Length: 382
Image (cartoon, rainbow, N blue to C red):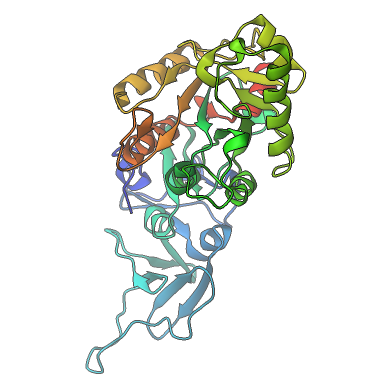
């Protein structure tokens, strides 16, 4: 399990060794929903503790308590017949409380403990063992745990900056490498798919229909990137242009319920194309290395703040994010492939993507709200 950068983890940030007081309670948010334990979350030796059962079940896991082993077992999927640790006959039972996730003991600097008869553990230890992301937002005194994308609603917008991760082409590396990271940090995404290149059993680099349908079910907005992506839209005749826009939407809506936005191929865009796009889509994203002011001036001409390539550094991306935060703008980041081999100019390594997502998560949704394209338009267009 890769670790979130220093400064993001609850255990590394919270310094108080005392139990959190009623005057400044800690809020626990699991996959975008406020969790309400019966008692306030305590801080014990600098670590935020959570009740095992409540959090594990919120994350889709099950819990079993073994009083003899003094172990709380957490498991995903079907429970195995024997989830107990192997123990030597000469080894006496331990008096310390232990945590096991899917049969593996999880160690932490501050061990689990019983509080009022219930097992409590450090939030980081439990959440990361279940493959979830953890963020601590000090200004809000909030712990965020995520293992799925959290798409916001209009009530989450209070005039802060916004950010969108907009992927082009519909490459299968998004499914393999980007989707798990977006779920880990709970951050929305838009994938603009070339409808005419959807994989149909052939060995290609594109997504197949089942992957697209599953991605949408898991919270990813599916957008259009034209039907063929063979030429810039400004170079096409009126008939060809209408085909590229109409048929892309029609083909994708055979897979997902709605396709409402488009990423413009090759960023070739003019007023004629805009008028044609308006017949089928509610928003169009172009690349002009600009931020979007809120409220929007033109929903059908959204700007991209930065196009990320394998030559782009984290600091360059961070600079654009920080600019949006400072000016309370909407920052759209354009990406393509996510691949550990990093072979193509428009492919970046998962490590860079994770560093960016972790940074956005560390800022907190009160400072910059992650949105997909259509949600951003709904919010910023008002």
